Amino acid sequence: MALSFSVTSGNEHNQGKITVFVVLSCMMAAMGGVIFGYDIGISGGVTSMSSFLVKFFPDIYKKMKENTEVSNYCIFDSQLLTTFTSSLYLAGLLTCFLASYITRAFGRKPSIIAGGAAFLVGSAFGGAAFNVYMLILGRLLLGVGVGFANQSVPLYLSEMAPPRLRGAINNGFQFSIGIGALCANFINYGTQKIRGGWGWRISLAMAGVPALILTLGALFLPETPSSLIQRSQDHRKVEVILQRIRGIDDVQTELDGLTKASSTSKNTDHSFKLILKRKYRPQLVMAAAIPFFQQVTGINVIAFYAPLLFRTIGLGESASLLSAAMTGIVGTGSTFISMLVVDKFGRRTLFTIGGIQMLASQSIVGGIMAAYLKDEGGLSKGYAYLVLVMICIYVAGFGWSWGPLGWLVPSEIFPLEIRSAGQSITVAVSFLFTFIVAQTFLAMLCHFKSGIFFFFGGWVLVMTVFVYYFLPETKNVPIEQMEKVWHEHWFWKRMVDEGIDNKREQESRL
Image (tube, rainbow, N blue to C red):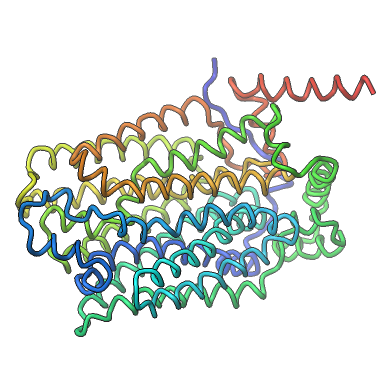
């Protein structure tokens, strides 16, 4: 029984060039990743700043400075603090279903604009916050912005990219997330040194810079050909856009493929009931499983709480923020490597290598903390920096596997008729489990202690096995021909073929 394979796309789909037009369009759209990454990086940094804790979370600051009887693992265990961090993802979860409708009915571009505008307003509330309620309101508005951006940007990138480079271009979304988080880490490191205790305001308000760029820049973005055809736009206009983004005059083959996919889409029910049909079972499973697995890698533990985690093991405030910046550099660099190799080596290979790397490094970190980090005192400098190195190795593994591929694969596997619904499920599951992990991590750290790393490591093992057996290779497959990979897969073909046979049988009776 074959467990892996690849489908080679036709040459006619690979003739497009890399044009300045498509590069600039995708770079601008990928700013949606920058705002997401900036928020992930900034929240963990400001919550480790003493001035921020004194103003909004004085109980935590008191425990950190005065109460030596509190366990190292429990110092930052606060429901209010986790609510501040995780409220964004609850708002994003609720928003993504509205964003799904807007993305399908009005296009990818309006959804991107709405995301940038909401994030811009949220950053203003955060930077001007004078109490914790205003702070959380700002986070909720940021969540609305991220909900729109995460729904529309991956689809935009997948639909604008030529098939042979779809992986590299779509991975630009995760690369942008890394850039945003990296900028946030360095900004936190700088603002923490500002005397007067107001540096955190700059950190939070600076989120408005990429949001403003995204909002204004998106006004000049072209709509994707798939979206234009889906909404019954003039096919001549679509042909002109295809010629601009592909850099060639003969785009008839791709246009015919998009038209055929759109025709199928228009003859079907656009409700979420459609994706529940048996023939779409593989896509539905992946729409839920991939974002779930992405979150239980534990990466957002590092992203949200890296400075707090480094303070837990004994590093000071500045050293913790600088260490978080180092992990950001590693993550961004590894994602860039993924962009270069994903369309050469394929998705499955990177998933497997990254999974093994993350499992090994998490196990080592858990072992060091179990052996040497007790309830009181910190790690020795040697072990503290060894933990930092292992976390960098872990982040690198995520950066070229589950980070970018967790967004790439769901965005490319859905046929047009369920694409918006499928992406909304992916985003919703991602937000749901990001919220759960963010909301529970500090409590889990307090109770599990070093076992938290073995907990996430166990999930990494499960997801690596899942990918090996159940995820087909999708590199170089035109997005409108993606159903081929399911027909040729050892497990999924029985469901897909049976669904098609049932449809033909029903049609023959009419």
